[in-house]
Image (cartoon, rainbow, N blue to C red):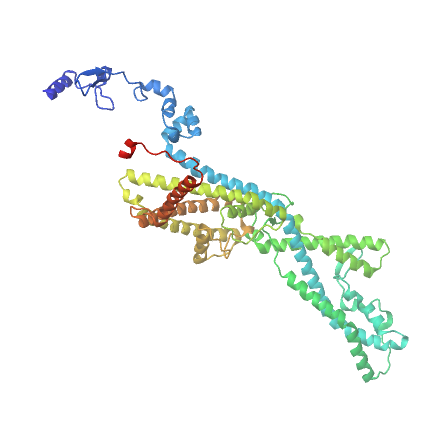
Length: 568
């Protein structure tokens, strides 16, 4: 009968009786609720329940912008303050309600990753300004050693040509009172002076002296008279002449060898970029306008060496003219001008800060890749990496963990909504994310091959490029392969960092699922062995602490339990 009456009522009203969320008719909420006394069986009215959030009309609820809903949630479940502020803004409220997952990706993944790149640009630029003067000084030192090594090698060759003739001339002049120890160093002094012996002629520089000009200050020594000589006496004199000069030649050879060894170090262009038109500033983003050879190490080394040599010759000419104006001898003026110009010459005037390469280096620091192909050498640069680099590493770790969690969460939610829950299982998700990581490594490898070809005009094998992608994505950074700082330009900072960061996200999602799989496999519905030991340790520590305190700090005897308590 009850069912028949209810059906009749619904039909008489046209079946349009509105029901609330609990399934009762809307007018049923107007009746006063009752409760039944268990002893008497009589009904008694109760107080009407307070109005809840769901009982309010939609218009009133919308006007309050979810304030009542937020305030009714426990403190542990309340959303962030930023979320509350966004809900109170009409524009942001619409976007957040309409596209919550997109907003989560933007605020939790995209924007933090962009911030990492901006941080790399800021601190990389500061590091370039600190390290570039040191790198320029080092390059100047290498070129100075190379110049001295070439000069000394040039002298050794010419001494072997001039020495026999000089010794024979001195032998013929010995009857005039010329001593070997006094005359030979004078004859060979232009050869043994620390210069490449450029001679100013008509206020301009000319090339090295030919061998014949080394005797121009020796007078008639090289105009031997026609007379007979004793060959035995000549042989002994020639041997003595060689012994007089052998210490100077030995010193020259040792110095030449040392300078050759130091000059074999290549020039570095980690923090600077040298090219025609550089002004010594921060216009290094013009690297994209250069040719691949101009960006390459060989092209920059050639230009830097040319600038250094031009500067050295300019300084030599200035020093020589100044010394000659002070009535300094030609030989001493050449020696001093050569030494000073070699020490002060620099090729850094044709270089700019390499901001893209410096920013890329900072990116490898904060991601802990650290290829090792470049490193700060100044105290200021190392201090910057020590402080700001450590903070950047912490920021990267937090952002990567958050981005990996967001990616994994959205994927699990997506597959579960479409009835593919098996893809969210740890074992299946581990396989899927691991496969995705290796596929993404292949994409990075292909991008690296194209980069090497476009930036440096160099070939890069598929095997080596995939190995480079692997050691970069896993942050191993062995250093056998890396992106050459000479070829990095501004556009690359928006390509490789994003490629690497996406690879890090995939790796983070894989590690999260794989660790979950390992824990589930080890526990199998129980606590793991380690967790059990830790729980035992905590419980034992609490028990020991209670017993210890009770036996040592309890001054009054405990009260005996009452009889009722004993009975219980």
